[in-house]
Length: 497
Picture 1 (cartoon, rainbow, N blue to C red):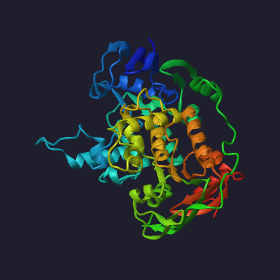
Picture 2: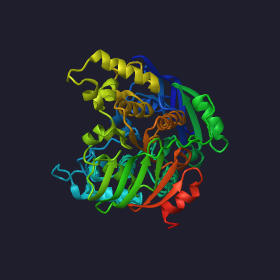
Picture 3: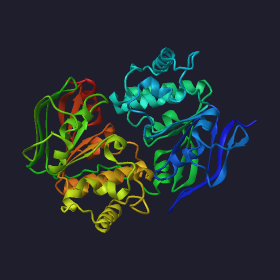
Picture 4: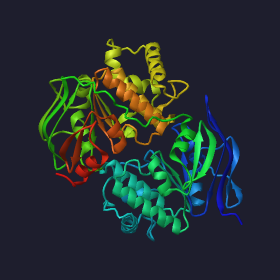
């Protein structure tokens, strides 16, 4: 008897103007972790949405335990033992952690009412299994991205899935949290769970996977045993070209002009006496573990959160008051949470590109739709945003292309200082190289850039200078051209003072 429990055979799925899946085949064996990789837009998430009933295939079939099945919605998928953790979180911010974990499946008492005591107890049990100290009574809106990701993991585990799909589960996790997740994955395998694991973090593939399948342009390129796979070969299969391994940022284009100055800024117990500078044409990396205060600092600089003390200056003018004032100061902000802060998901690509610049583009207050369309098409072509038409809803784009839309928005405002918070989180290696080259080009044009990243190679290859944060403090400033990953980590974890 075959140990294959799932087969997706010759799956085809098309959308207007785009063939997302073209005769794709994929299988999963019992107790294995089968890694699925490919560039953004390769078809990975679409294939998983076919599996979980979000989309219906135009052709092909799903074979589960040797029998062809039809999965019409996510509830049917769960009933068949299939659960998914999507790359973009699917949580209700105003509900508690426990309510999110069991949303739609709440335990009931004999009167048919939600049994809150049991709800919290079961949530606590699952959180403890993840070695997480998250309060099940906390609202999801109060959690950072890393903790929201862990809630998504717990939510998926709560349905007792036999097949678990993980779409970029480690993208926002710290090294310790990743180690915990990997131990949980091993435990799940030992308990009969098979896992489809989607990731762009190439260093994870051999550590977590048994087999690796590559998709490109909606087609199956090939499958390799993880222990035998060579990363260079996998990258070539994914993108069809060699990816540069040399330092991207070879020349420091910084001038003496300071575009951002942060002086003695504090914010609650999260940020304490922060001082930093970014010069015109300079890329400054901000490194540190998740929870060190990096994102909170970005939000204070941009005016999303209010500082308690200190001063923030953009080109010598007071900043950090509000996002609207920041836009007027020619400041852009690409948030790590593009769904919450970066995009208007229910609007077209063209509107997302131009809406921060409407007063600048149309001072009369009347939007010239032809001009707006032309501007958006120009940015689409310039940044190679993969969409047939800028009137398409931005939510239909892949993560990498959504990130390009956000970048286009800030380019449209003529921003002279931009914060990039996790600019390549959840983005494949090909799109990652494109984003890096765009950031480098912006710096060469005199734009000052503050780049926050949990990806140390990204910090090392892109930064002129690196500030290291720990526990709400900046503990060290390093030269981006001479420092090492080991030195950055040492300061980030407290190995050096």
